[in-house]
Amino acid sequence: MINNDELLPEPIPRHVGIIMDGNGRWAKQKNISRSEGHKAGAEAIEPLMDSAIALGIKAVSLYAFSVENWIRPINEIRGLWDLLEYFFQHKLEAIKSKKIQIRHSGSLSKLPPKTRQTIKEAIEATSMNRGLILNFCINYGGRQEIIRAFNEWLSNTKNPEKITEKKFEKFLYTFGMPDLDLLIRTSGEYRISNFLLWQLAYTELVFTDVLWPDFKPNDLYKAIIEYQKRERRYGGI
Ligand code: FPP
Image (tube, rainbow, N blue to C red; front, side):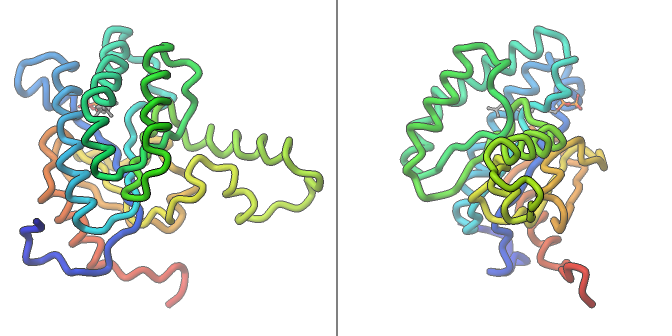
């Protein structure tokens, strides 16, 4: 049920990227730990997925952990792995019944084996689903993705002189996902922070002051209403 009169039936972004920022500040305001803030942040995800499905969005990419986040205190990082494990273990049945396909962007190799295993199991268990693609960007960096794609292309091509955008995109994590139409960043920060750099070329950007744990379906609708007011010219007039 979409209860917002201003929202038009179209255009609906096919692929929405979200920089889920502000868990720490949300926790600070409430005088609770940063880990509690991340926990509340993880709880915000499911209702938004339901709304994304109801709206007909095809893919959502969530920035859950960047390659730069390793400099955080070890306890916070461990807490995030525990939270990811908890999320996939407890939400997997709901994810499966909603026909959501879990994908991952980034490198899982540095994650604790149990977390890695849990994520891989969720990806495998949902790989045949053809509903919403839910792409978790974990240990992800946009520059790293581009360099990795280039190296993959290099070792997979017989004719390294000729590269096109189309060929190159086959080596990005997001291959097969629709173009990124909308990027939302919460918490009043106006940065891209190494997120989906290649994919952002013609994306509409929406920034909101709402802290991530407070970001509710109506905030998603508001972002899409703003998107619907934009004139996308792709360099034309
Ligand atoms: C940024 O807020 C948030 C992160 C670095 C982590 C995002 C993670 C979640 C929303 C939960 C992940 C869980 C699952 C299941 C995906 P911040 O900590 O930088 O906030 P601050 O800027 O206010 O300190």
